[in-house]
Image 1 (tube, helix red, strand yellow):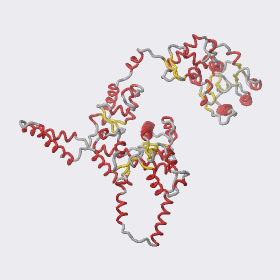
Image 2 (cartoon, rainbow, N blue to C red):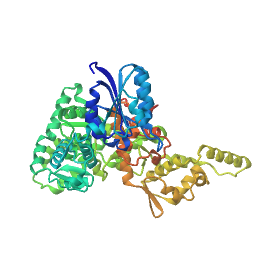
Image 3 (cartoon, helix red, strand yellow):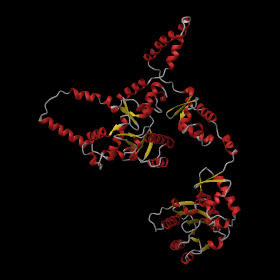
Image 4 (cartoon, helix red, strand yellow):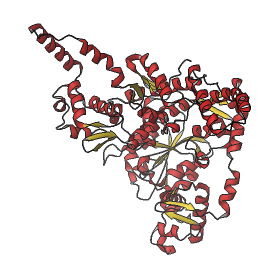
Amino acid sequence: MTEQKRLALLIDSDNVSAKYAPFILSEASKFGELTYKRIYGDWEKGSNGWHYPALNNSIMPVQQTTYITGKNATDFSMIIDAMDILYTGNVEGFVLVTSDSDFTRLAIRLREAGKFVVGIGEVKTPLPFTSSCHRFIYLNQVFEQTMTYDEKTLRKAVLDYVSENDDGRLDLLKIQAFLTSKYGSINYDTIGFNRFSNFIDSFPELRRNNTFVTLKNSPKKPSKQNEDLPTDREITDVIVGYLKRKSGGHEDISKIEQYVTATLGKIDYSRFGSKRFAKFLDKQSALYRKSTAVYLAENAPKPVKKPEPKQEQKPEQKIEQKPEIKQEQKPEIKQEQKPEIKPALAEARLPDESEITDIIVTYLKTAKNGSENLSAVERQVESSFGKLDYTRFGAKTFAKFLDKQSALCRTNTSVALSESVSDKKQEEKQDAVPAKKAGKNDVKNDKENNEKKEVSEKADLNTVKREIQIQTVSRRNRISLPVLGKILRKKYGENYLKDIGALTLKQLVTAVAGVEIDGSYIRIGDAFLERTEEIEQFVRDFVAKSGKPSIKSLSTQIKKKFAGFDFTDYGYSRFSDFINAIDGVRADGYYVEQITEKL
């Protein structure tokens, strides 16, 4: 045809093999310019080998989920798109690639609208559909034997494909789909292999581990690859140069990570003994990180000086020790040196465990309900003493340090004064009430108060689960079942187990995520607590990088990163409630945003 028409190419992947892809595009282009190129199918089920042909030929895949078995939803989706394109008036013709007679009425409707219709399908295509098209091309007759192959050709194609796509875990099915899209259905028996996996195993250059294939690297290759990877010094130099160009010499950690990736490419920080970029920064002496802000070391905020009364304790110890050890011949020299040494020792002195705990208790007494977010408490400590190494007290993290303090209790994301501190005043008040005989009015008032408590503290399964976790952690992660049962009955009433559908307390406890039972005691497993901290940090990092992601996208990313995640494990009936319990982020409507605290 001499006239260049604008055409819409619509492919039914359920009825046409992917091996015909090159020929379909070649034949369709003979009739005009392919303005639309779309292929329809259920891509979640494997796409019938069309994934790579569609990707390499710029054909847009259209997902059509099969809602009911036996119903061809792909046909309906293709017909709807064809009618939408028809009414836009952007094309003069359609190329319908299918062997299904269900498209006969569509072809007739397009012809009635004055459009040029070309059909492409196999010989099995019914006559009603072929006759409704202006032109129909039979794939079996024209395409047969156009792509020939032998063992040498297949081996070269496999090695080229694996070399270009080797990521250490290249799926075996992807290689097979690539060969099918290029050479059609391959009979591996003709080249001496009864299965495709056996054919792959015969390559001396390849290594197969179950369903994954990778190249066998020679001993020299790793050293060459390592030469191209940046060292920790080079990464640090890039960051230092970037911060020097910033006013104030500091920047947000997410922006710095983006800049390093754009400059040096994606980096695996586990090579330097760090799981995350933030941990890598903490090991660099030229840099200083405080929460999400990174500073040059010389521009780092100075820690607040320690209280003066604490500094007077050490000089007395030094004066008592030194006369016993040193000889009597050098008293004058020692007395002259001491005034110079004392200030240096005072400045280098680190706070002890009781000083840190006192700061936290004082801070929580001013907080609402005597509790505050975990990260807010940690920032308060850092503002007083600077960044601390809690391994001095036998704790890996700040959270583990809190768990060892009897005056404090920690839940997943918050810190509160323990019952020994916060409930002391209430106990004193109760003890101070003078004893008197219970009259009728007193009995009546007690009944009314009990009724009010039962109304305000109704037992709910999620709420009770969360209460069990809180009570367990608040008692230094160990509480007996009898004590726990007494607390729950007092808070939710004698019939709380019946209200939530549990037969026994032990049965209820076993349904709480992360709880471990040891005889008559329960505790929260360390793995569950660590996983919770990882999830919370992931949420903060994801929101910081994404700006303001939707709640749905955040939920998808968490489930993809942490298999088996369920927010109801933490006693929340909504995902947004779980997010709002994490410090630094807030679920606002349909989106999640980062909370920036004003200093």
